Image 1 (cartoon, rainbow, N blue to C red):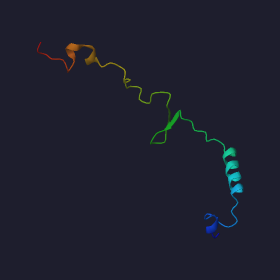
Image 2 (image 1 turned 180 degrees about the vertical axis):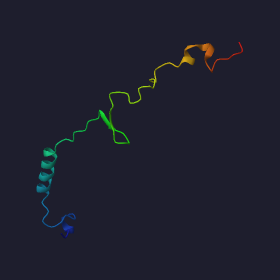
Image 3 (image 1 turned 30 degrees about the vertical axis):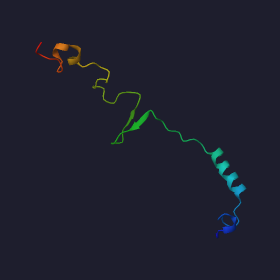
Image 4 (image 1 turned 120 degrees about the vertical axis):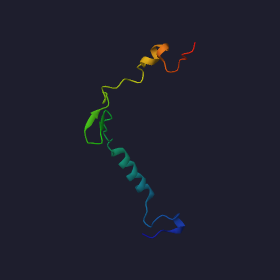
Amino acid sequence: MASNPQDGGKPEGFNQREYIDTALRAVHQKKPVEIDFTLHTMEDGTQVSTLERVCKGMFSSTFPLPSLRDPQRSPFSSQTS
């Protein structure tokens, strides 16, 4: 299709109203994509639930470390008092 420079560069036979109607119809009729964010596919192809811990032997980040419970055993405490 050749463009018409007098018509703002639009191709000949271009109907803007029809173009907008077609675009709006496509947007309104589009179905949403269903994604389950509670499942994660691992590198080896297995699927795990994001609602459970994958590594059950790990402590949570809020679990206090033993050395921080007892100031005498802390690596940051001064032994010369």
